[in-house]
Amino acid sequence: KAGVTQTPRYLIKTRGQQVTLSCSPISGHRSVSWYQQTPGQGLQFLFEYFSETQRNKGNFPGRFSGRQFSNSRSEMNVSTLELGDSALYLCASSTGLNYGYTFGSGTRLTVV
Amino acid sequence: GDSVTQMEGPVTLSEEAFLTINCTYTATGYPSLFWYVQYPGEGLQLLLKATKADDKGSNKGFEATYRKETTSFHLEKGSVQVSDSAVYFCALPYSGGGADGLTFGKGTHLIIQP
Image (cartoon, rainbow over all chains, first blue to last red; front, side, top):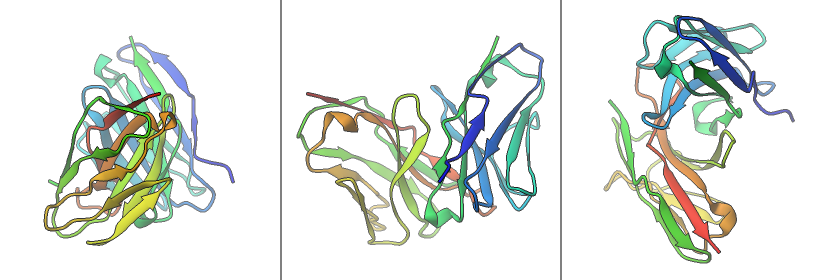
């Protein structure tokens, strides 16, 4: 059974650019959530999608956005990148909160 | 909002020592509680969970009991191995008003020495 796949694994962008990260959930998982992990702030919830609808959103500026497609694949976009956006971005999928989440290996974004 | 507090470490132990990683939470009601583990260079893995008060979650020799009286979910293992070296995160559902998503503690870096 394939796990959660995130692409790309590593990314280097310049301040002011935008970036799109991709997440393919486990087959049959309709809930996809995104997290930002930094040494200073730890793991922070970005947003969660279910059946193409954003159900929940963390405390991040509007530069962070996402979407989910009909096949449950999800993308997140960060516009006007700042140095502080450098982080490991993790995606997780689930059949429901109480079943726990399966995480991907993450995309390491470096903004220079 | 809901939050999780856990010891950050690093916690350094010798192989076969007893492990306790403390986790306390602030939440409305009695949410499900989780422990996740992150090995170097990898994403997070669900270690164990408890979905209601007094439940005990267990996996791979690790245990944690949901204590509503003390709002705690401490992680324990009787005899740690070098392979247990990782970062451990306590988590509960995000309380932003929607259905899913997790709030994590800061993580506890565990180092097991042979």
